Length: 199
Image (cartoon, rainbow, N blue to C red; front, side, top):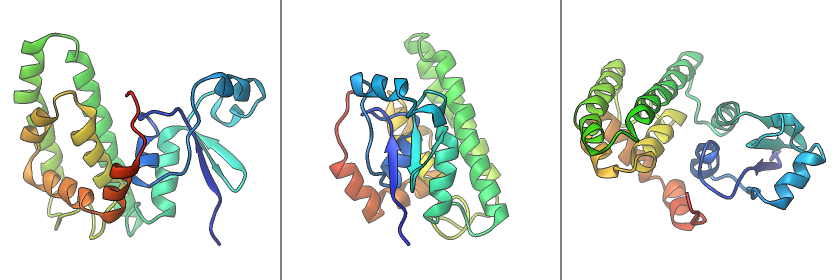
C-alpha cells in the first residue's frame, strides 16, 4: 500500500532538501502568514514549532536527520544490512563535521577560503575516502545508491560557494559516487524540474 507523504518546509533548499530533492519529495510550505498560522494552530507541534516536518499517513514527525533516515529506509537508500546502514550514517555525519570546519572560515576572507579549498577540504575528503576501505564503487557503501551517495552529491555540488574548488578537492571514489548519483534518471529529472528558490 502506498503511503500518503507530505513534507512541510519552507519554499527553499536547506535542512530538508536531501529528503525533498533527491528522494523527490512532494510539497513544501512557505514561511509566511500560512506558516505562522499553522504554528499558532498547533500544526507544527510535532516539530516543536519548527520545520521540516514529514507527515506520513496523517502522522507528523520532525527533525531533518530523522526524516532523511526514514525516507532513506522506506525507499531503499539505507543499505542492504544493519552494518551498511551504520556505515551510511557515519558517512553522512562526516559531512556534518566538514561543513562545520567551513563555517569557521567562510567569513574570514579570500586567503582563508583559498587555504580551505586548497588544503583543508582536500585533506578531510582524503580521510573520508580512506575510510571507505575496499568499497567496490561507484557507490560509497554496498552495491546500490544510498543516502550517503546523495548527501555527498548535494554537499559537494551545491553546498559551497566555490563549487569548482570543491570539485577539485574531491578524491576519485567520492567523485565516482557523485557522478553515479547525478546520472540517475530520478535525480536528473528532479534537478531539471525543481522550483528555483532564492537560496
